[in-house]
Amino acid sequence: MSYADRVYIENCKRILSEGVWDTDQNVRPRWEDGTPAHTIKLFGVVNRYDLSKEFPIMTLRRTYWKSAIDELLWIWQKKSNNVHELGSRIWDSWADETGSIGKAYGYQLAQKHQYKEGMFDQVDRVLFMLKNDPASRRILTNLYNFEDLHEMHLYPCAYSMTFNVSGNKLNAILNQRSQDMLTANNWNVVQYAALVHMFAQVSGLEPGELIHVIADCHIYDRHVEMVKNMISLEPYDAPKFTVDPNVKDFYDFTTKSFRIENYQYHPFDNIIPVAI
Image 1: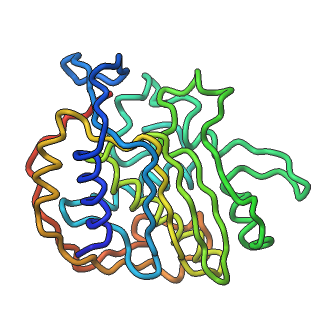
Image 2: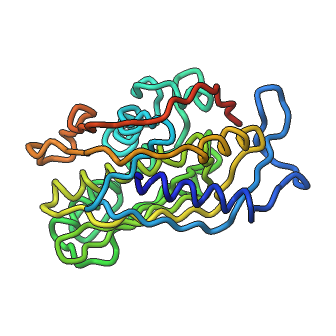
């Protein structure tokens, strides 16, 4: 059984058995027909993935990992906030007529700040610190810029990464304010597991642990039956994940730099309604 599946099943069972419904609240998200999109949720879920043992991709249904990594590169490598520079259409609902999602995600990572060593944006600062001061406890990024929130078409969900080097291993904590378990959970886990692999490789380190901290971990009302059906399935073993060892510069990674072999997954024929 894939470890990612085991974590996912345990999380969903806990949400469904111990979670709290927000049906008594005036919620912001809406379904396409205008109906309020209510959830059942748990607060403060923490999951740990040892990337040295297994790549955390689920098999209960297919995770479109190339599209997930493409979005990650759009944010972290291109540092873009324009959907015209993204391969998929997942951000179209939040884009304006120019394709911009406002001062969100990649825009925040691209902003340069003054340090004693010079000017760096957030990504280049992480890369600099991992190579020059790996013992630092100050290697982190933050997309939740309160000054710019009013100009973001969607507030960042996965908003902060903290990196820490222990021995020769790169560990990281992903902080996420909100997590839609059906549509986005493993998508985000795959993305940030890949990011740890990338940063580790170009810094001469080995991937260690990814710790995923989720504040509001929820299942939408129209997703409950789909989730119940998924977690009743028997998961497959995790596939083999490899990164092109010839890539030495973070900005040289592409989706072709990664391979996943023997990826078995259960078919998923449902059309998933998405709340916006």
